[in-house]
Image (cartoon, rainbow, N blue to C red; front, top):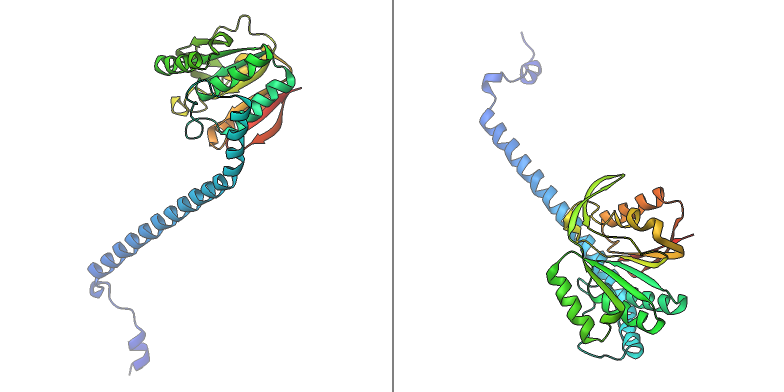
Length: 261
């Protein structure tokens, strides 16, 4: 006689398995897994946003103080250029104008025009220096030119329209400014704040390869938007390729300064 326990433990015939129920259960598990994964992704995104907000909140007093120092140093001649948002952080702008005043910088080159163009021009007007700015957008070029004239600093700035063209580098081809570097020797400060990041991966990489041979000893390269991965990777590439270049300091949340030794 067959033992009852053995009979109960025998496997269920495959024909008797409720396959429809199993398939439905698997579908439910897959759906729940996708939901959990989506929730986890959103939580990570929220954590990153909160981290940025917390950092920006901590920086607000420094930026407010920087704006006050700007107003004390440069009494407004017209409506003030915007700061914050798409513009550089006030604390980074303040560091640059103070650096120009301390070093008596003779030549500043700027990639991408905007708020910084006006403030740099105000600083260079006091020191007798000059600013060469490259801008690919005719619209932004016109806006910047109007601001320079309103603030009576247009004579300090050589504002050049430089369309984006295919530019060859050791790292391949980039869409970058059509620049003429003739006469741009002994650059004391190079500001890399363009072209826009959506131009392409590592969009601003050609700046240092283009101007490396024109940088004065002790010059600084100021890189905006280093909170973005592309800009951080770009800086790492520069440091590995340019033996004279060293990290100098971080300005606020989004700007890094490199120094030529």
